[in-house]
Image 1: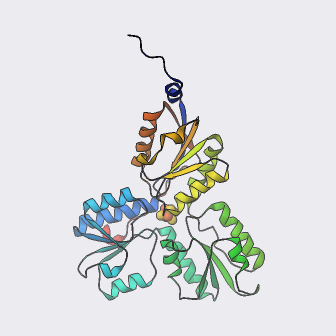
Image 2: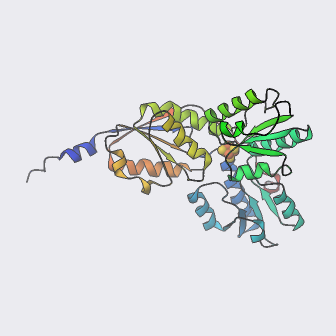
Image 3: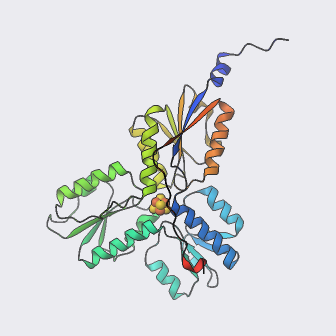
Length: 324
Ligand code: SF4
């Protein structure tokens, strides 16, 4: 019997799909280090090791560490006195290590060194008598951690230009600004310009606080999105840098979808798509990128190409207590 003539639907399915994969994508040096800290703590102290907050915002990573003996909690009062505890990559308010010391807990701080750098900048600005305007997203753990480096009332959070307009300070008050590390490069520039216009003497960091990994991943999406019909971003809904990647694509006129795993891809999304972009937030492992590529390969014939915006060689040292 002759093979059936392909319907228009199967022909469409066989049409090659250009898949543009962003580089850099996925894990950054701070996330690599935080995960290694939990793994090394498990090796050194044995299970269970408690972790305050999701070590990085990725379910796959968290489940993998749980399987090795990590227990995730939100607050220190959930940690027994005799168990080691790791603080997440996002950083913690000062009162958290202070409480751990008071209880004589064995703790390891996995705060990304680039977040710690912002914490030190906050301390220095307060020492110089300046009030800090912090640009960030309310409720994000990094923002809670950074605002918790200073006394209540010494730092004011703004998210938008409208928030800058509402600030109660006079134009000659001593002010400084700092930013969350995982913001939109473009939005933050606008907020800083609004601050500098309203407060000409405001001080800022020498180099912006948005980290290299956030900037590079946004630059890579800017490179590929204009050539794509759709961009998929692998990341968690509570991952700030992943949400920013969706926004970057959408602002360039290319629809984007945030997915956590390949199983969330709706085949209907690919209808009429000739070129698909793919990237991953800083807390999403490469194995999830390959899972998505394989899943798309089952729906369409894929021609894969990497679009490289920058090379990354950043590596952060582990805390000495885990290496000596
Ligand atoms: Fe550090 Fe940037 Fe990675 Fe956050 S996204 S952990 S600040 S390198």
